[in-house]
Amino acid sequence: GINNGDYDLERPIDTSLGMRRGLTSYGDAHFSLFLRKAFIKALGYSDDALSRPVVGIADTRSGFNPCHANAPQLVDAASRGVMLAGGIPIPFPTISLHESFAAPTSMFLRNLMSMDTEEMIRAQPVDAVVLVGGCDKTTPAQLMGGISANKPILHLVTGPMMPGSHRGVRIGACTDCRNNWASYRAGVIDIEEIAALNDELAPTAGTCGVMGTASTMACILVALGLMPFKGATAPAVSSARLRIAEETGANAVKIITAGEKLKPQSLLTRESFLNAITVLQAIGGSTNAVVHLLAIANRHPTVAGTITLDTFDEVGRRTPLLVDLKPSGANYMTDFHNSGGMAALLHELRPLLCLDALTVTGRTLGEALDAERSIPVPRALSCIQPLDAPLYPRSSLVVLRGNLAPHGAVMKASASKDRRLLRHSGRAVVFAGSEDLARRIDDEGLDADEDSVLVLQNIGPVGNPGMPEAGLVPIPRKLAARGVADMLRVSDGRMSGTAGGTIVLHVSPEAADPASVLGVVRDGDVITCDVDARVLRVEISDEEISRRQEARRRAEVEGEEGSKKHNPWKAREKMRGYRGLYMRSVNQADQGADFDFLRAEGI
Ligand code: FES
Ligand code: MG
Image (cartoon, rainbow, N blue to C red; front, side, top):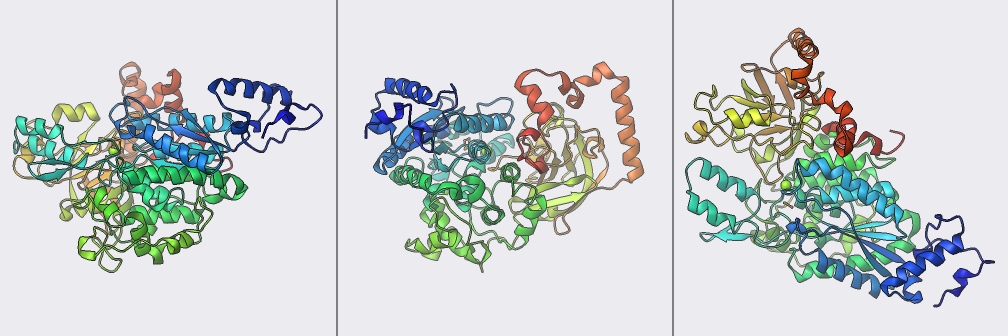
């Protein structure tokens, strides 16, 4: 109706909904609303439209983000859903991060995007927000911001891209980018072929089509109850995806009337996170999701501190790997979707789930599963294994500890290509950073054989800002040419969720930290990794470690000028801008690599 009553100075304004929400700017609430409506009317809205619940739609389209190329259609379809349910949709932009166009790394910018998202949700008069995104860092950033802002949120991911084709074989970003590049490096395929492959690896809009970080986080959003079952897997370019968008828009209007109970800080509980970790283990998901989930959990006032690296290992010990997707397996996200997707997987995992956890529709996960009536896919045609015949019995992601990683390290054991390396001791070949690695890895004279342990230092959160996905240290060319396909590799960095190999990541504390052990490992030290015992150790005494750390401190004090470049730990005090903020505030991987000041208060 017409709201002239809004301007009646004798009547207090009900600020519970929409355009009337949060009218604090001018002291005079009636004038604030008068002004706000005057401005928004420049867009052509009627008083009727402006009297409706307002659903903000966070739009992350960008010419630099092919993973979000379908965001315009999704915003349209979500808007239609909002209007069909009686609300008014108002899209707004936030920054957009694509993996390949976010130097130095997208992870460097994840926390910035979370701040952008949090503050825009807070600042604008929205009653609920649909978060449109999909690429690796986007969904974590949006959820971190959404939990902190604590208005109702619903996720709408852009969805996986379709696979491409080369010589009659399906290929897809980005596992096959890496496999084929490795073949090219080893001289197995030639320059014409690698160029032809380049056209087919990302053939449509959408996120990487394997179980990389984007797909992993999408599945996790379903497990957390923040998306419909099909929301994780429907292809970016499918009509199903548009119907999901419409449904999400409608759900956004309904969630508003539910009040406190469906705001993220109430909806999400420790049980929701246990469900998320169960799914992460069952899909053989990206190691990056471990860092993201820790950051997300630590934004939540009551969950913070109750989900730790050890939680991932504990859940892993009872959770088998069920989904046969690259990089752990053979298939693509479209196959997962066609096998029944998350609904089918969650039905299999039922005995391992907390079914009382809430979802954004107000139903529990158990109720939502009961109501799900999809026709089962014949076993032989499905890439989802039953619980009693898993692909890998348990613990696809493991947490390792020991003197080399006192605060923990992570490995995707299910993606190991040479299982003998899961229990292995070998001599360290140490690279001091990415540049050192690039300079020497293909050196004919490199003192390394297939039993060596390749150690890469200084690619942690502070050491190489944004903790680049450089943990997949390439096999030295001379060994690759001899057919060596996998070696034990250790670093404080991350690895793309689309990559595989026997690779220890996220070593905490990182090498740049003067108190770390990783920072003082040397060539020839024997490193032991034992996945069954969850151990990562360097075979040197505590005394020797202390001696080396002391020598490192002295060298850094004496060679002040020369070492500054290599000592970001010290240099960060004087850095300007966002980089300075990042360097001074980022915490370690075992805490989520979030900014300390963004964690929930009181933990
Ligand atoms: Fe965006 Fe892979 S680059 S999902
Ligand atoms: Mg990735």
